[in-house]
Image 1 (cartoon, rainbow, N blue to C red):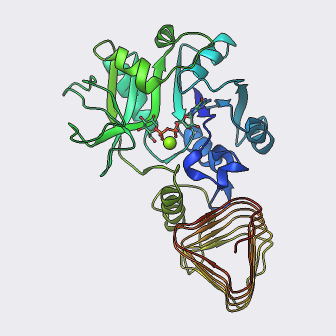
Image 2 (cartoon, rainbow, N blue to C red; image 1 turned 90 degrees about the vertical axis):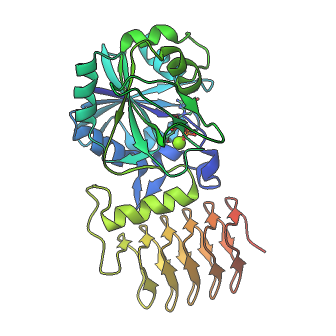
Length: 342
Ligand code: GDD
Ligand code: MG
């Protein structure tokens, strides 16, 4: 089975982390994000993944290379962003697609049963079958009401106000190649706004999926996904977390610091004595001075935090940012890469 992963968005809601690292390979729990998706897909028989890249795309290829965990990786690069559907047309034009394939949004952490979704797709004879998951707040997703037989009634991308269902598009599609006739060549096109609305009543089905599902595209959801991976709420092959529910990568120095609960310390970090890392993420090479306190925030690669500094809940610091001794980053603040606070 073949899967195309859409990995070309700019990841604007995760800036400043995605100013220097594209979202698909942003470390999550210490590993390039897409490695979780590829492991999950491989578990459902996928042996070839096409990565559709745009923004900072060379980095995706540098990080993942031509093969990962028994899966062949092929790259398609766009000169201009083609949206979500345009890249699939581009892959077809390159002769890369088979008659049936999966299409995935490249920012979804999940252990949904794709095998069951493919079986359902065959049963209904659909042209495209969308995985659907329930969420509490549907406003940032595509809402997909269906008939009892699974056929889609409407595709409502990011609508405000009353919605007919809490089932949303999970960004995982089984697709027959004839759907691509609805996509123009060489121009931006969106599955959510152009293709799926046009397919309603003409072979578009939904399949409600069980299991864990999270779009990691905002700092809040990135942190929640981190905690869920550490707690094992979503299946993965990460090493087990320690007794504080944390993951500390080698080589790192943390003696005398309080790491956890639910913290990630990437490789080559140094955390001084008396410092507290509480439900926070340190990517690789972060240096934290003694007695600093970092709570529920994300620190990009190479961030430097001075002695006794404080970083509050929801803060996001880009790669190489610096917080001086006794400095303070207030809750929710975003610090650009390389910037020295205060
Ligand atoms: N190659 C390429 N080119 N990929 C792109 C482009 C592009 O121009 N634009 C976006 N992508 C990729 C992103 O990298 C991401 O993996 C995926 O397409 C979806 O884009 P997002 O920007 O993350 O969309 P969203 O989260 O707001 O909404 C989408 O996902 C929701 C589920 O998480 C929609 O598909 C919604 O309907 C859905 O509910
Ligand atoms: Mg998204």
